[in-house]
Image (cartoon, rainbow, N blue to C red):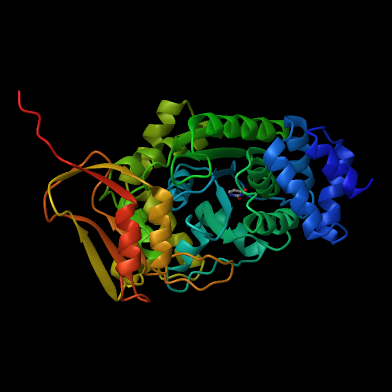
Length: 425
Ligand code: URA
């Protein structure tokens, strides 16, 4: 086998054999295949696609590049949820505790934010003291106690994805359906939960910008997951506006806690109930309607908040944030963006809003850049809302940037406002 033949085949849209795909992945992890060669192959996949059979083979080869966890010691049915990335998506902080409060276990491994999208690990690390790098024994002991734990991606899990994802980020080869599928599913299969719910984001803040592509990715992920023996369900959900009102690490933890305290409802709350219900139904807890009621009860009764509180405590964090969110990092500076006349919020470019939040310090452009946990944006309105003159559209938060002009310009450019004209009859 040789790499030139493999690149040429994919360049000419010819299928590879399973052996060729394993050889490619293993060769890249061992260093035998160099970055420029892997980049060329990834670009060929971006341009020509990959057959479903080859995508399955790529996913399994990537999964097998490192450890596959043995979580059979966790004494409950295990379920995992993955979102393909978006802006303001803090669903894992709500769904994990809610599902655990309903009797299943949610052992989760999550990533950090890159570019305009946030990462669950960064959000959790905004809680003072919270540790995300745990040994497997401690992780599974926490899952056994509370039903829920989240840790960062360990070095031994899917090294192929770690290396390939970094290369894709720097070679404009992220937005490919088979590559996203293989990247996400290899990690999920290495985590090895019994049930998988995949939340494929669609819209301006997502990798998939239209329903057709999002639907294709969802179907492909279900096929790969089921083919690997998992109970698997993929749903397509909206990312044409931020999920909830907060973007930014500590701000998003605050919003998740407020949802679990029953203080907030709306799109984020409803989506969390839907996804929790999908996990519970896959885990055999009942039909989808009964499972949604169960999830609602877990949040409404405060049992889900108790799971989060105990998990934070066991992972070394200050669990008092569940009662007093002012203990989370607070921005030194804030800036209100106000409407100059009466307008309707017509649309939001989520990616641009995510970039504005990054400029405030909430995200990173390079893998190891530091972030300001207090930074971000609070939206005071949703798409379709009428906003009066001088009303606040959004508030920008930062501790590292006292000059808001660039971030405010970007954030204002991300919202389309149309002058409100009343319809007299
Ligand atoms: N998230 C991942 O883990 N991988 C991708 O390729 C895209 C989103």
